[in-house]
Length: 223
Image (cartoon, rainbow, N blue to C red; front, side, top):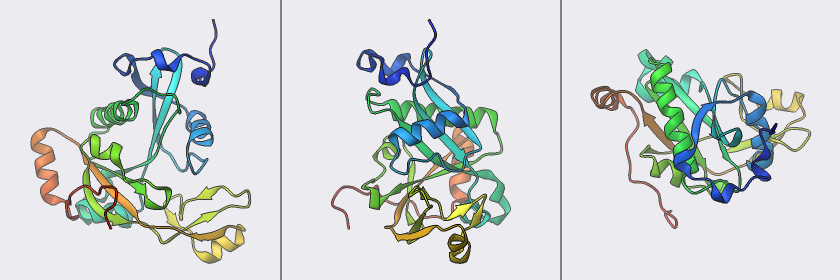
């Protein structure tokens, strides 16, 4: 029997056990489709590396990574280690995915990065406060909380799709946005989290180089 990647909406997802799910590569199309269906931005954004959460031939979620701007990379471990930082740009699960699916997908993809990309020391990810996110899944997977960051605005393109303030690693200026007929919209700060990769010894050494403060996790009601 042939299945579509997106039969998750027609499958009996409630019977799926997280322990039986696996993390494996997915295509750009998979990320774009999942983001269109389940992510508040409705777009997959920039991506260079992608993994999915699979139960057999059924895809339940996707995670995509890219390279931050050099300025952001240098701010983590210092300018001499700018090439050792990635960014988790999208984490998207179907509405019917079982509990703890996000944690399994994050953990599996980070293990893949650690195994296949030995020069990657850390992964940044953000939770958008204006979308009501605090980053609980990042807290549950032991990411370090390093405060807030992010642009005070975002763009929407002519179709009304939310777009990043960066394209191919470069900041989108207001003049460039105007040329593309993008509109600017205010947004709140983003909670910034960091996963440090490597062996126990490597993680300790890399954390010693960290230029961000490590702070208590934010909770609902914090100001």
